[in-house]
Image (tube, rainbow, N blue to C red; front, top):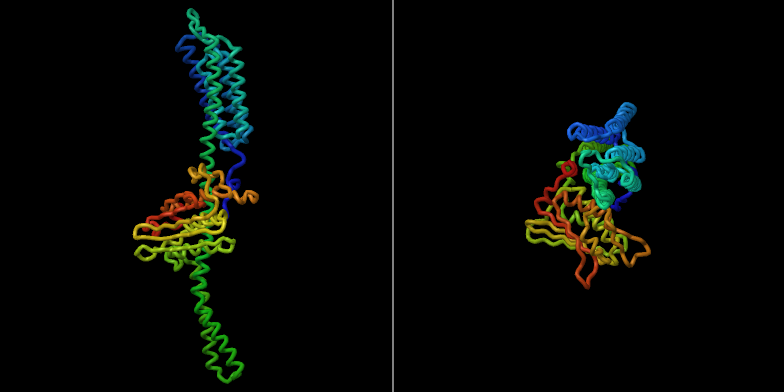
Length: 446
């Protein structure tokens, strides 16, 4: 059960739909027209209406051209989306030039295109747009027309205030863009990791179905095939000893051979139609679960010690759930990878709970990572003794294993052994009723 590489699920390029950009541009155009109307007609301020309306009109014309010429649902290349956002910044800068520069309270709208870029575009393009917005704000600090105001009582802002406005715009662009990028990146990582989880779960379902069918075929076909073998051997002996002296008996045996062969065909047809409910190998005791997950890891030079204890009641028998098989198997594989010499797998149950504890004698988990286990794409623990080999763990595979196990009702916890012992300990606990009635794969993902 190999760990899943993060690079297999991360998208190297990000795309924004043209429709999204156009909606934002239309919203900006309507807002700008409304602001011009309110300032010119409502507040009766002297405003250069014609240049401002021309700018908004050109922006709207460009929106119409893009909407007619291209499919709005198509995804833009990052550089094309960045170009449109840069155009938004330039349009705002020109409007602010005619309406007071940084004295205009709408100057903080420089932040909007950069935030949009931080949520959807690569980091280098977001940094470029942020730099462009800061450059425009800097130019407007020195060059702009007067702020529309009452001519009889003009507003004069001191230079120190304008420097503060410029600095606040710069800080807002930097800090909020960084914060937005971090939040979006975490959401993207989680989305990719969950997609990887679903892919692994589907793969494990297929493997489990194949295993179940193989076991059912071996069980069902064992008896008729043994009969065919025995009768064939007896026929061979009879023919060698008696030739054709007993044709009636041989005819009866041949009929049995034919009937048994037909029975084999019927069984194979039935196996092909087996559903997950009611199939004879769908349920497995806890001891079988432990043995099935431990068996693939016994030949790697690590001593795997298993111990199963009962606290009274009969052994719990659960549904053969691919999520449980993969989750426990992945955690066990991680323990084998980092163990120095031995891994302990302890399982026990009571009338209320079922518990599996997997412990290794490796270097343990780095304390700062121990607090964050469960996050996807976590920095991985390293075996100090194997630094040259570069073995790593606790990456996306642990996230997938924990997610799958928790979907079946389990609580998964990680800790290190108490000094002077060393190594990691993983504890998996189910309420007994959840373990025995854990949903099948289709129900879990549905």
